[in-house]
Every structure is written in C-alpha cells, then in structure tokens.
Length: 123
Image (cartoon, rainbow, N blue to C red; front, side, top):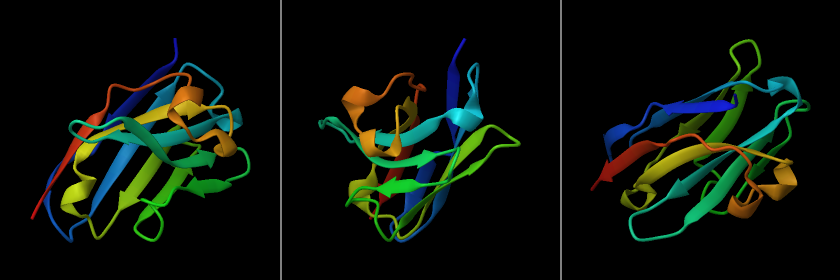
C-alpha cells in the first residue's frame, strides 16, 4: 500500500522557517518523483515544488522560488521541504504526492496523496 505521511507543520511568525517532511512507503522510492502541494483557505490546491529521486532534478513554481528548498533522503525514503522567510500568504495545508515527473508538478497529475500538514504563518 502506497503511503505518504507529512509532518513538520505548525504555527510560525512571519519571517520564520519550517521544515516539512514527507515519509514514503509502499512503492519504489528511488524511481519516483514527489511533489509538494498546498491549499490555502478558500483556494484550490497548487503544486509548487517537485523532485526526481532518481536524478535529483527539481522544479520550483513561482511561489516557491528563492524561499523554499526541496530535497530527499533515499536512505530514509523521505522528501523534505525547507521553507524560509515565511509570509502570512504561505498559510495553507501542505501535501506531498507522487507525480509522474518533475515536469508534471501539477495537481491533476498527482497519483497518491498524503493527508497533509497545516502551516499557519502569523503576521
């Protein structure tokens, strides 16, 4: 059974940092691509960063460029999202999901989802 479990969310002040984790199991992690998505209150879910575990290539959407870093640890079957300089508009539920490739870092291409972790950034 494919499982993705997010952790690391919480309440942080604007300008602060958080590191989210996505622990994966039930599939060939080394051959996969995994992405981070988020859904802000009252808005749709958006993909903003993906990584290919096989070759380490990454994709960052506009909202993630310069402040977020995606990485992976194949020994732990885990993908991380380091977020810095957080803004109130980063408040959302953050999900990880498997995607076909980093070129398909979009919601409709995601295959298996975690249940999400909530991030709240206070001003």
